[in-house]
Length: 299
Ligand code: SF4
Image 1 (cartoon, rainbow, N blue to C red):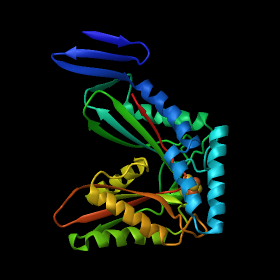
Image 2 (image 1 turned 135 degrees about the horizontal axis):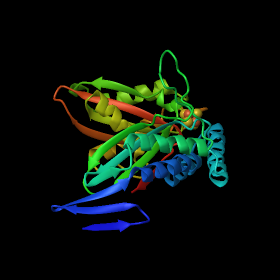
Image 3 (image 1 turned 90 degrees about the horizontal axis):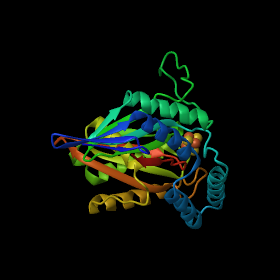
Image 4 (image 1 turned 180 degrees about the vertical axis):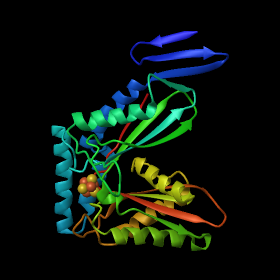
């Protein structure tokens, strides 16, 4: 049995009781091409609103001036289809792939990178990627390769999230391998230590992604995933939700403010957690600047 939808180029096969959806990889390329531009130009609404709220509550006059400029910059970028920041970042892409999906028409990773190359070229976005990190550091000239994280989920859809990441904030992120005895207070101290060390360098007001648990690399990925969550959405677990609120309050008391001092150091703290070893308590902090860029599509 076969259905063909000419618009989505999607073919459904029913084979021995299994339904398999085929997606042409060129659809992935096209989606990512557009998402690269959308993410660079349009600040998500919840971040924009949080900046405006921060402007209302900011206690420092200089801080209010900085926030006015950040808000105006986001409005100009949206109105004129221009990048919010000159650093249009490394393309971090999350793909949640339904286990009933089959890709056809080429290699998926190549298709993702083709989308990034086209998006950054068509959108006149800065190409910020070097092909080798230590000795040669030659620019790849099309912002590839992307940092691609894939996960397998139920269903026959593919959710793609792009989160371009500038390195002013990425460079100030960190991992701390705590032990269980450090507890909640140890986690708070670890997060605050990384934020204090970052100071105004990550272009605050920042959004702080925190990953707790797993292994060293899992906690780092959790902190990145935490940044991909809208800042209007809180952790569902009541204790982690409370921790998010407490961390936000502590960070906003540091005085770092929106770059030149003040009370609006962070717009939100998003915490994600995972099971861990009986002897461990990994904590990662991934900082994002006020240019908290995202775009999302479901194929
Ligand atoms: S940290 Fe963010 S706002 Fe600052 S330069 Fe980098 S991308 Fe731009």
